[in-house]
Image 1 (cartoon, chains in turn brown, blue):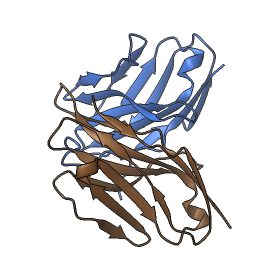
Image 2 (image 1 turned 90 degrees about the horizontal axis):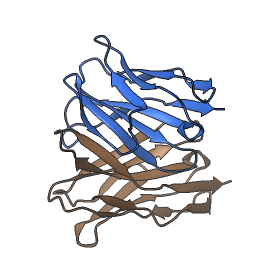
Image 3 (image 1 turned 180 degrees about the vertical axis):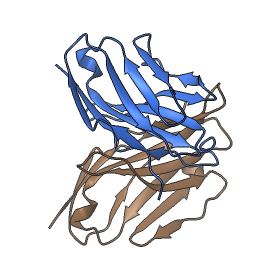
Image 4 (image 1 turned 120 degrees about the horizontal axis):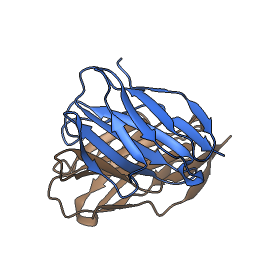
Length: 117
Length: 115
């Protein structure tokens, strides 16, 4: 079965620091997708990125960047120059095919990031 | 931009009561999902639905749960006889196709409190 591990339960940083959130996954699929979601205190899930297992290029979007390393089954997320508004719980997720032909997302336990002013 | 909507945002019910959580997926999407998040824990898959039938369900999705697409726009999750442990945030999601090609869009969630 698929598994996503986010070993960091909580991280606290001071504004403008860089912070990296770790994600390690397990899968027997050769093709899979990885995701990051942000959950602010208001509770909704905000999609951040989807990455295909065939594409190992790192991705940068503004202050966010993602490092996908297939060799170590990791998909880490870095926030550069963190801001107070980045405070949230961040979930890493992995797509898993179901017997019915659809997909489901398998989530990690999340990392709670607190950015202090 | 199209979005998934869910009603109500917060539902309080007494143990043993039936609740129906409602979702309006994005209009041209074909796959529908329910996920659950107990407070402070991870998001867990409950069920996926395609072509008017359940594609997959998790161990959590027992006989107390059912899903329905009663018309062309709504997608509902019913809990027949709520238990205290059903208290959680319930997220609806939809996608045009399977998520390997198409992203699942999540609604804002319904917080269910069972007293």
